[in-house]
Image (tube, rainbow, N blue to C red):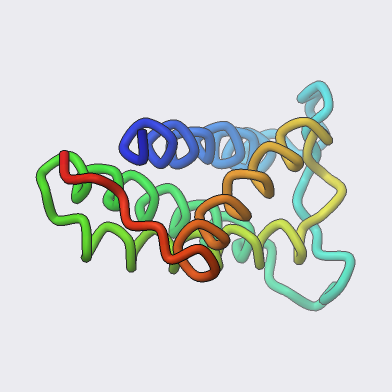
Length: 127
């Protein structure tokens, strides 16, 4: 289960990266409910910060999923926790420009990862 959840959540960051890339090439282009990421909390953040956060979360979650898949659960857990923290900080910094469902789903997965490991001390079964 951990493998699938982390993999899907990590790959979900591809949507944010694709939107950011599209807007970098075509500022002001129609993107549906997606818009350029500008931090409301820290307006002075460089425009590339959202791309950095999304990229770090993508790589972190996908790598954690692969570690679980190949039986390195301890390393996978640490990487999943770090990725959930980075992703949650990204949600806080860039809240608003993304569709509400995507934001809520991402926050929910991050919360489950953090609560399961840090509060409940759940350890995933070996792959």
